[in-house]
Image (cartoon, rainbow, N blue to C red; front, side):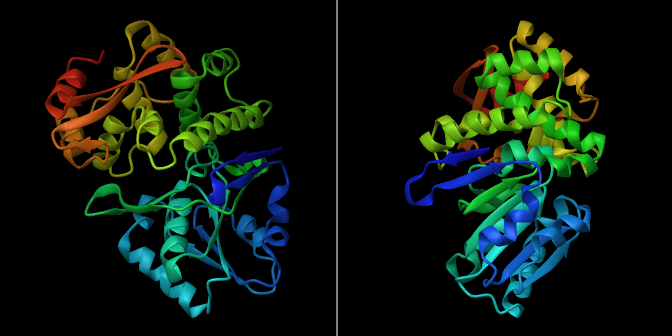
Length: 335
């Protein structure tokens, strides 16, 4: 299936098709230099399948959020330069959201921009971070604080890569699909509620989640308003992630961050879905420490933070409250 993200001269296609991994190199062009960026947690065979062009190389960074650092970014840029890449060549990210963010950012700043192709291999990156053009690294302990908006030339989603994804990573990715459904698509939420996310329906879930996100990105490419709905659950979630030191995955933190932002009836349904997907529904850590990084959150403007609330499945409201009000809201258990 082909989904088109319509952004004028920055438009691009998303291919959702089992087996499409093997067609990436041919699509990009055999005569170009192809810099394939992956990490140590991604099966090597995926990068090798992409790196079949005559002039291609594979560069592997360490697995985990630590790879989204200035130090690793400059190592990647140095490898690109040593590979003699020019502005007519391309970067291909093969892996999860970390590799996509890092690869996209490197592509956006190398020689003021080279072509970027994304090949997400995790459920989280398929339904969320591979769509929309956000690239970033972490800086001074703050997540995604340095980055660019840089749209890919094409995205290739091959659900066969999910067969090697550990169950916990699959569940963490499923959370992002739940996030979009509960905010914007009551029918999709009901489907996940009744059938879960399985090998049989995962392509449909991916496709519907992408359709939701692409419609938002087309209307608000640079997150001036509507696109902020996609940050649902992320304000508290990023705080938990920042202090967890790897104990929780990103999707698990978002799950915890969504719960207090829902009305009681919605929260009851959400918690049941999260539990069915083996996602956490209670946080027993230091809530004050988790709330401390909020002042550095990119959704903050002065002493105000933009929040998303869900009081009815499939519908959201957005408002701005002070950071103090937000912290009080969370400590009291949410809406």
